[in-house]
Amino acid sequence: MKQYFTYFVDDNIRFLENLTKNKPESIFDDPYLKAHKELHEKYGLKVQFNLFYETIDKSWNLSKMTDRYKEEFLANKDWIKFGFHSRHELPDYPYINATYDQVWKDYTAIEKAIERFAGKEMITKSLVTHWVVMTKEGVQALIDKGAKMMTCTTGNRLDYPEIRSAFSTEHNFNLAKNKDLPVSKASVCVRATNGLSGMPCLCNYNHLEDKEADEYFGKIKMYKDPETGMIYNRFAGITMNAVRLCDFPSKFENLVKQEYVGILIHEQYFYDDYFAYEPDFAEKVGTACKILLDAGFEHISMEDLIDFQD
Ligand SMILES: [Zn+2]
Image (cartoon, rainbow, N blue to C red; front, side, top):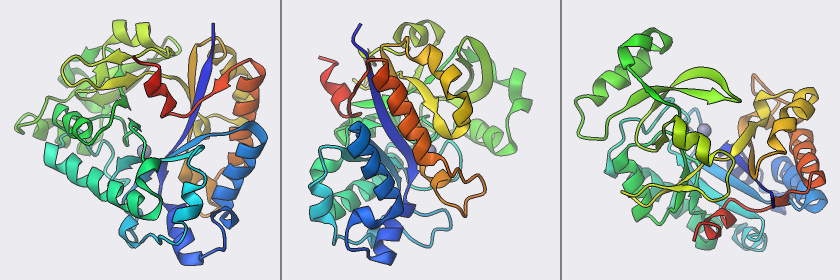
């Protein structure tokens, strides 16, 4: 069995703000991009940065991103891609009740910025949206924007009132609001991880029930939603900021048996002013690459996944 792995980083915006404010000579003088370049040189790393439009305190957004590095970004387009993630980090599940127009508008804002500071060809069609969940209207907007693939939630849908207490007031409020909105219906599910029943999650349209979730888990050939045409990326994954480096060997024992693995991390953990700063950010990415390459995996970009579907 030929095996593949991809790498992406969610919740990105700070390195773009830093480039704009610090004006280094090269994009790779920025510590975050430098770390990625070193991993690219050592392991052939290909990265997809999934972007927020605004910083957490809303003091900066992508419309302010400098375009002085456009040529340098473009020169690295074979291993760097940018993707839509969400307008802002908060609230959780930003698109649980999204209208078509909301997703179209948020996508367009990020798309326009990437076109300006890096170039159209650096925008990915293989998406990971913030907290994954999207309405059918939102999925349609993404398809109309040219997206082909996105991640999905999984697990059998549960009767909502039974586990109402498992959710925050905000999530309950959004679920209640959803009933009255002219968008696809939200529900709740329990996502199983490694066969163990996990935390209850919210879900909406881009979702696979247990049977299909299992069938497509860790498979390079993915489920295609017959109604919208969106392909659901169901990678066998590791969220590296949530796993200690010393636990990588046991975590990867199961992953190396899969056909397709996605390794991911979040930008915030790279910075020492973040409450959950991880000084071993780059070491974790490098270790994951080494384990998978040593196990015979081929590293491909998130964008390459689309070519496997026809
Ligand atoms: Zn996110």
